[in-house]
Amino acid sequence: MPAIQSPESESIQPEEIHPDVALVARAKEGDSSAFEQLVRQYDRQIFRVAQHITQNREDAEDITQDVFFKAYQKLDQFQGNSKFSTWLVRIAVNESLMRLRKRKTSKTVSMDEDVHTEEGSIPRDFAEWRPNPEQLYGQGELSEILRKTIQGLPPGFRTVFTLRDVENLSTEETAEALGLSVPAVKSRLLRARLQLRERLSRYFKQSNPLQALEGKSR
Amino acid sequence: MTCTDFLAKLTDFFDGNVPPALMVEVEQHISECKHCEVVLDSTTKTINIYRNSEIYDFPPELQQRLESAIMTRCCGPRDAAK
Image 1 (cartoon, rainbow over the protein chains, first blue to last red):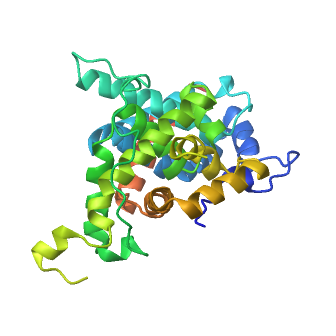
Image 2: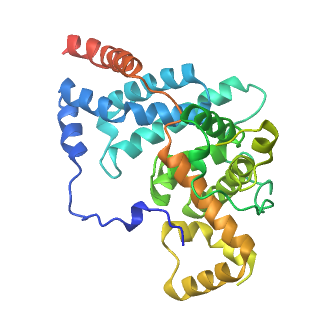
């Protein structure tokens, strides 16, 4: 039976102190090299989160800068109740959603958007997938398929899927980063996963009509 | 267990949070329902493909440019002020 490695299943000693705690403490005291190390550790993740949500590279670059600038300004407010990375991700989500709102001036963008629709909550495609579907395509082509597919999800679903499944935050950390309840995250996550699965099925199922039409042998 | 019950437990299944007694029912349902077996398999693959793929480039030049801009914006004026 297939299984997903879940962060909850990893054995983490509760008394373990995360190395970021010492770096944050040094940064709070004005040690810029400590803050620089935190930037290096997490800028890729923050950029990826911002790009997933906004679907725009320039916005993601601006947001990455803004996130670390805000974090630096508010370092004293970080109490260490959550991981430093989760705190950064929360800022990145807020900045990204704000950017989307600015872009779509006539329409509100929030985590509540599209929640009431039942679209994509019921599987319709039951074709079996190839054993290693990612090997059907070259890296560039696969990335393009994955980008286009996740772009089609409503922002609220895309955000939950990004944090839980791309960034591998736990369901609880995802809820904390988004200011949602755990049941709300689970509900959105189920629909996000099912919608992506449905949309990817045309590329990855056993008998792929697109490949047959294009005469591709992979 | 019905297909609807199975779908309702899918997120808990991926989180490893299905109680053992209920897990028996889930496994029983998957073994009997081809549709749900396919949904589970393809959803698992969906998650793994996204998790294991870097779909957005983050080249070293971009990383260096961002880090430089961030540190200048954060620490330049602050250091000068101290």
